[in-house]
Length: 140
Image 1: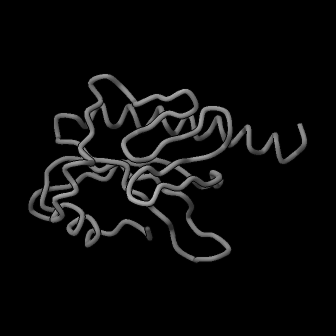
Image 2: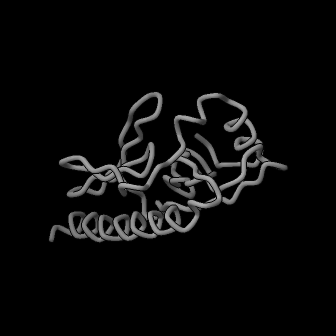
């Protein structure tokens, strides 16, 4: 999906499907044998790769500009109070000159601290995986 815009968020929350994206971090991140997921976006544990499990499932190599971030939302503007977690695949690529964002999930205002902590953890994982990516590309 292209860059997240206020219009995309309004459309996202107008869709009944947004309920499936509500994050419950009571038990932490979802972990499998080879990946960790924050909502609909996961990171492989051992290779520099992300996964999207919403709609058409796909994976890709992490770009150097990959990151998770938090977007505050309000009922007055986006139709819901809380925060949306976004995974930015890249700022630009050789195929497009604009960012590519995936919505990982959202939570209510009272979950903001847990969402922010989860984003910080996942960004630490992105950084670790990018070190691995560069070590692999340098033949180390």
